[in-house]
Image (cartoon, rainbow, N blue to C red):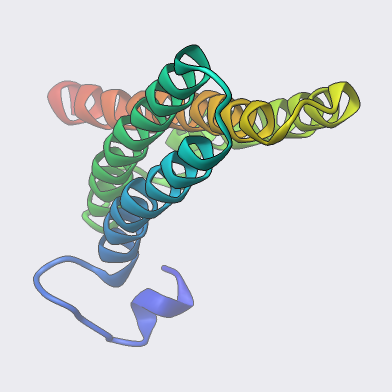
Length: 152
């Protein structure tokens, strides 16, 4: 049990971990693509750059919403005892792999030194990749917890 869960703080029916995961990702899904679209719209030199930047922003937003929903379900399963830490190895591995993707992709993006639109679009694509890896980890935990519930 996390310190936040032990505090007894409740914002609705869900435990605070589930609530924060969900609403944090939803807020990010609105804010990050919104700011990115504004930056791309101001600095795009062609319609193609604008299209690519807006498309990357939409993909990042959708993946953040998916991560919020999956993260909430993982926290609810963990709070209900259906997903103990030993069954969450693949989810934790996804965090390590996702951070490696962030570091190496970020360094490669910085080394190429594209313009503002290239940096924003590249950053959105890196964020999307990281978010997709985390979604796969959460999905793995949820599928293992459901299988354990069926088998047990």
